[in-house]
Image (cartoon, one colour):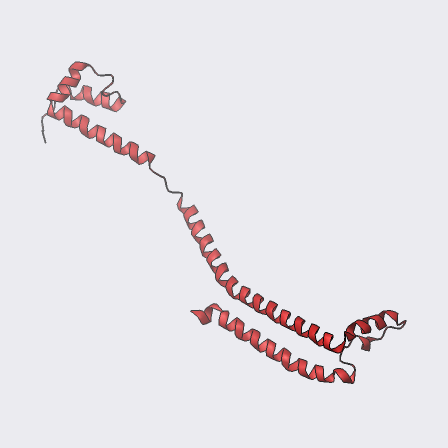
Length: 174
């Protein structure tokens, strides 16, 4: 490093500060900068800093920290909703399957017995007096066996639903 300064140092500094180097300088000053080590180093360092600043200004700017925090919270909430949604979808599929099996079983039972429920609806529509006991499907003695088999079937369905929900829960999986 040179401690002595050049007599043309102030002129070179002024052109660099104004941003006029090398366009507005005379050929004599350019020749001086090429010969003088102090002025050459000043131009070299100033132009390097100016290029680095221009590259930094053109670099991708990060969004404000508040937006980054908000996006992280949103991503966390979406992940939580997705974790909760998985067991619910499983329970819905299970419920649909059970409903489908019960419907098929009911239709098979009705086909075997000759569609008695259609006759029951027709007699209900023709009767002039409405009786509440008509709505109770297990009022007849013939249906007592169906009622006794329905209660354990519903209990088994409730137990199976509870087991499926427990197995699908997040606490059990982790």
